[in-house]
Figure (cartoon, rainbow, N blue to C red):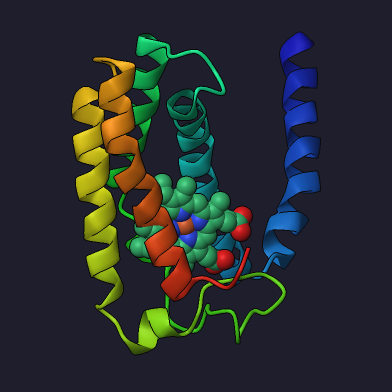
Length: 155
Ligand code: HEC
């Protein structure tokens, strides 16, 4: 009985969810996925910047973890997140990704490389000391801003 009602609930849950998935434009799901990844970056970077600025106490363990999370994201294959035709002109309500990403491709790769390098250098030392964190965090922030200035609408 218990199993049966669980199954029944699962079926109801599924039928409630399915139409939502089916009606969602798959392109918007893709845009949300890449924005989600960006938000995870920001969520990890925020406390690191706060520590560097002295807005929160330096915590070596947390700094290590957050920098490792940023580095972990470098391994995520995001190639399917950026299909042509998903720029801010085509999806003005949903995306801030400027068409230049695609029209000047692979130029944006240079900005991604700068970001990768800065994150790898930060990850190597973030847990050592506040001074070490401060020495490397700027380049990470600059790498985010550098790409946004060029390829993302103001936000
Ligand atoms: C190589 C380019 C590039 C780099 C590097 C980059 N971003 Fe982004 N970011 C973008 C683009 C393009 C968008 C717009 C995406 C869209 O709206 O479709 C964006 C959007 C965002 C958003 C808004 C997401 C939303 O919900 O609309 C946040 C937050 C963000 N980035 C944070 C970061 C942080 C933090 C870093 C650095 C740790 C970073 N980004 C590095 C290109 C980049």
